[in-house]
Length: 441
Ligand SMILES: [Zn+2]
Image 1 (cartoon, protein in one colour):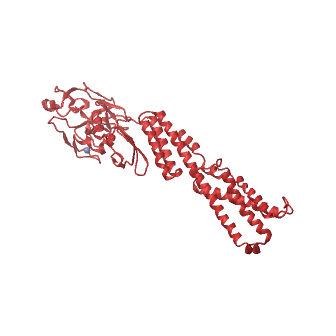
Image 2 (spheres, rainbow, N blue to C red):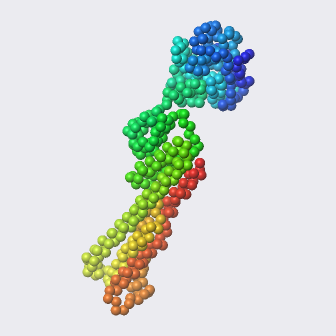
Image 3 (cartoon, rainbow, N blue to C red):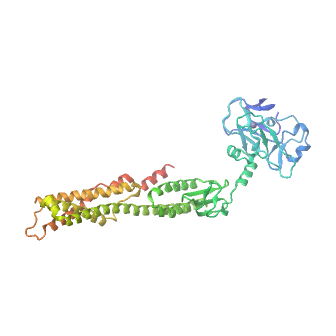
């Protein structure tokens, strides 16, 4: 019968396959349920040597120097029977609470891994080792007080080590990020620090060799909800930047994203959001410039080609005239000048033209070409109508009727405006996507 400790009413002591007696579940137990609370006398580890031999196996370590056990020789308590397993189903909350690590089935033996509570006691000559016969696939065969240092166990039992072991793990795994400089390797992510944004003892934000924004922190820094939200937006903007920005603009943009994360680590969420907004404005402006360049270059290159054709016609005019005949010569020349009209029209409204780098280079070229093509078609129709005297008859006695026709065809080039806005249709807007990302969180 327990006197110093408490055990879950659905647990009982039975013969164990692992070792002697063990603690078993008599019903199903849900994950996280409290299974036992350990109690007893608080003793220095070396006091174990003074205990009656029958009591020396039971003390449980609760701190580097202290154990919980019984000074008196007494009948054993239920909590004395928890066996070790290398594949346990129970772990610790604090130092004395044993909880279920997962759902436990009826008749399962309750075990914990002794590495969750054991560590070497400084200045004590008691060294703990134990041969293990738990029979699990992951059995370590030999259990020692150094086991908590094993990275695979630290990962496996994260959140289930006795509080004092958790603190020791945190302390040994702590990185002093403030000592890292540009060119160093960040030991937590194993990435080279190319551009250091900011580092303190407990966290770091930097750009790596690929100019990606990286951040790392020690376990004592809890990621808040607002930090998570900023980090999500940073990751999202970063994924857009490779598509929307020219190479030379990526570093300054990623620096802004990193700045925002650094402010967020300092809990200056408002400032972090301001910087994020500034980063987005920067991305919008740079990507618009880039898309406009694509757009103007594509239409300009068509117009250059057309101008070369016009020059060729001029050079070989006699042959061309002979081949096409007087009417078609005028119509073809008029159509070619329609493209120049289109370019003038595009340039004249370049400030209001909607471009969007999100639609990609191809769509900007297609849009530019489509406009020049439609303009030439418009000019062609105007030239045909003029030649057929359908729209306006050529003024009589005009010195150069062809100049008159060319002027009309250039004006007809403005028909590029009737081309539907492909770019916005394909690209959508970053703002709309932003909204989706923010709302999906
Ligand atoms: Zn084992």
